[in-house]
Structure formats: C-alpha cells, structure tokens
Image 1 (cartoon, one colour):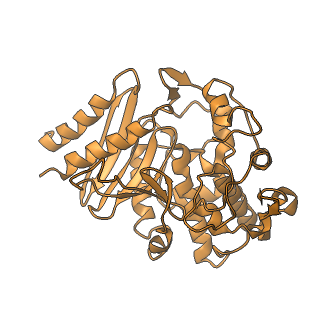
Image 2 (tube, rainbow, N blue to C red):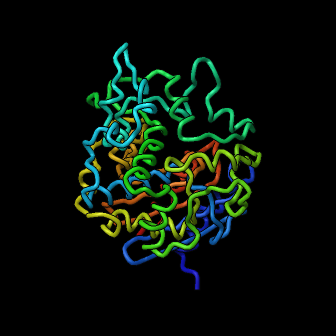
Image 3 (cartoon, one colour):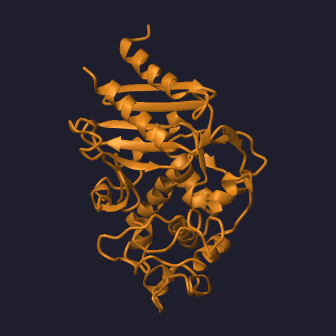
Length: 349
C-alpha cells in the first residue's frame, strides 16, 4: 500500500520531468528510520548514472583514511608527493611561484587559488567545458589537466583568508597524491576503501569509453555523449553510481563508517564559493539565504553535487540523507530545487 507521503514524494519527481529540461530523475532519501526511493521519466531505480563532481566525496574519504593511518597530514606540502616537473610553475601569482607552498588542505578546501582547467578559459580559448558541451569529446591525462591549468592565471596566493575558488585541478592533484602514497590506481583505492566495504555493486570509476552502462547525459534537449571525457575526470568527477548506493555512501560518510566521525567537524571551515554554496574541506555547504527562504524552514545541507545534475547531501538538523540526479548538465540547479521539494514533503507533518 502506497502511503500519502510516498505519493507526494513521487509527485515531486513526476513534476520535475517535463521532457524539455529534464527527461529522467532518480532520488533516494533516508529520514531517521524511513527510507524512500523514486524515479521518473527515463531513469529506473537500478540504472547507474554519472555522479560527476559528487565523486569528490570519494576522494575526500580516501584522503581522510590516509590521514587516519598517519600516511599524510593535511598540512603536508604537495611537493612531498607530486614530482617537481609537474608542480613547477603551476601557481605563479604576481610574479611569485607559490607552487611549493600548496598543501593537501589547500586542494581539499579549494583555497589553493588555482584556476579550473575544466570551466575556466585559457589564453582566449574556449573552456574545456564548453568544448565538451558543443560535442567535442576528448581525452586528457592528469599531466594535460595540470598543463592546461598552468596556462591560466591563479586568482590568489594559497590559503588567502576568506578566499576560495572552485577548481577541478585540485582534485586531479589529490587523486595523484592518493596513487603516490598507496602505489595503486585511484580506481583500485575506491574499490578497496569505499565500494567493497560498503557492499556497493553498481558504483565504479568510469574508465572504458565503450562502457554504455551509465545513463547518457543530457545537455539541454540533446543527449550528450562524452565518454572520452568521462574516462578522463577520475578523482574530480569520474564515478558512476545509483541513487540507492549513493544514499548508502553519503550516510557512511557522515556517520564514521569510512573515517573517524570526529573528522567531520574539521571539514566544516566554510568559504564563499558560489551562492548559495560554500566550500568546506572536501565538502560543500548548501544553505539558502533568508531571501530565498524567508521563513528559515529549509535546513542546511552538507555534501557535494556535480555538473551532471547529481548530488548527495546530509542535513544534520533533520537527520536526513538524500542522493539523486536530474541528469541534466545545462541546468544543474534543478537538482537542488528537487532536493528542497522532497525535503519539504518528507518533513511535512
């Protein structure tokens, strides 16, 4: 028997799928002991999809596991793990090279000041993001991502107070640091440290451009087929999962199943990054201002989201976990509006 609450949650997803901006959506949530999952449009409950930058939570979890084992410190200079030939000239601001001063914490918290190889333009060229969205699928290596960043200007010295700049190269570098410390590929670390311990069966790093398992992305009304790019993101955006498995992951992340629970407090150092988002240390804060939530009834969330329209968040105030996607790269904000609508329904008395 479907309850009225379940009907209201499903109605949210059905309304989001309009055949113009969103063609399929999948969400799962857990509030206290109640778990719910729903889909609409061309997504089914067991259909894996690209989680894009929500991948960064996996990278954060692995870094924190290495911290727990004493294999790194967040204050370590990344020059301890990254070859000088790659690092040299990466962060030159107003004539001074800060590359050797970059730390793991700077990368995790987006306080490195480094430009974004993916969304920023370099030397008058189109951004890599725009190239991909217009159908120019391409591969790139870690070295090429770093090189692309070197051809752009940093925005501020590392660790500048109250400054953050979202940059995917930060997490490309963290992925390389994980590989250097463990001597294993990033994908293997994800499997051994996160996926297998949590019993996830449909979550993996996308590495094969011929793999058609994940749902095809959308850019506006068109399917966006960029398998080469999706194999290139790695530690900054290459994971595939389902809403049910991301729900398991996000709960494990925030309840001490992957690393000491006490670390969560240390991650909550917030800097403005793009409203209404703030960057913490490896996580983001989503908090609506009173302008958009005059009554102050929408709780704040911590977690991460991705350009694919995927997200995974936790509300400490409401003990609510939520994960899902609207699978649309042109309007990723729709996933947040969906999260808010589902939250309003689940909290309604």
